[in-house]
Length: 90
Ligand SMILES: O=C(O)C(=O)C[C@]1(C(=O)O)C=C[C@@H](O)C=C1
Image 1: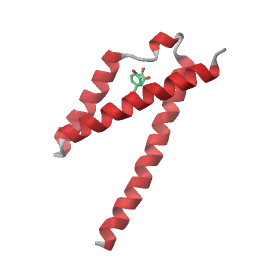
Image 2 (image 1 turned 60 degrees about the vertical axis):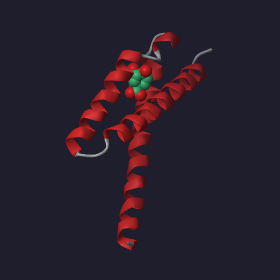
Image 3 (image 1 turned 90 degrees about the vertical axis):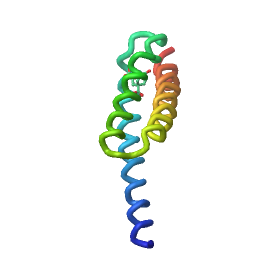
């Protein structure tokens, strides 16, 4: 069990590192988007979540769990992008 928990802890560190990279892309998106009302894109949000759920289906892991995680992730990303957009504009 110790090995399993060490594996989980190492994987969680990797996941956070990958998420840090993803949030870096959100900073880039906030810089690129020309107006505040383009930060939230519901069509893109739906397509990002659908793609993650499809990957979950292929991997044989619970699709609803992945849908819930991605809902939180994309909403958190949108909030972060709004903060970035406001921080970098007057
Ligand atoms: O694709 C974008 O436009 C993004 O800013 C990325 C992202 C995401 O988290 O994947 C975030 C905000 C948008 O509403 C849609 C998707």
